[in-house]
Length: 277
Image (cartoon, rainbow, N blue to C red):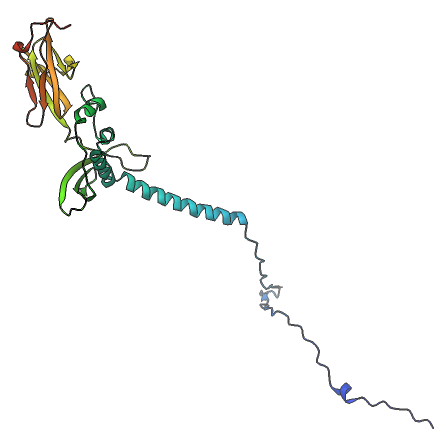
């Protein structure tokens, strides 16, 4: 009889093969909520929202905003230093030292008139000398509308002060470049206020070769024999004056406009007998 052959499994085939396990993200499912009537609503686990890519335009806009803010900060910092009262006073001193009287005039707080103008100012300062210095020391005190700056200057190689300049400044109502304070130098060192000239009534009075308009005559201080001219402001220094009356003219008379000498009296006997041509 034929005997069926039985195939005996090998040792290797008897070892159980481990199945490959794939990692699956763990999902937590909340228990369903059940109402009293036995109905339940499914509860789903929250889904992760995918990240949107960053818009390059937003990055560029952010960089531009930061750069703009830095520019504004620099603009205001430079402006405050440039237009600050100390810097104005220092530039004013440097202009005086260099005899740049055109620039000095621009820094002064002046109300122009027939006798207060740039040409008259330059004429008064034409013989001034330059100031030699190597360094300056600045001290200041200020309130809301007024600043006082004291500038001490030193010659080269010297530790001793050569001189000093006291500068008074006032804040102007109008801003510089819309944002910055505008400081002007008080002209106290350069002008004489309410300079008075007495002349024969009816005579034409000339000051620095121009006739003084009748609007400067003050009736209060005039008399039947003389007219009193009061000039609100004129520059400190030596001026010239003469009178013309009834076809005659007088010789030029020096006018010393100083703080302690603020009037001039012109008399009939100053008229010459020669008719003015």
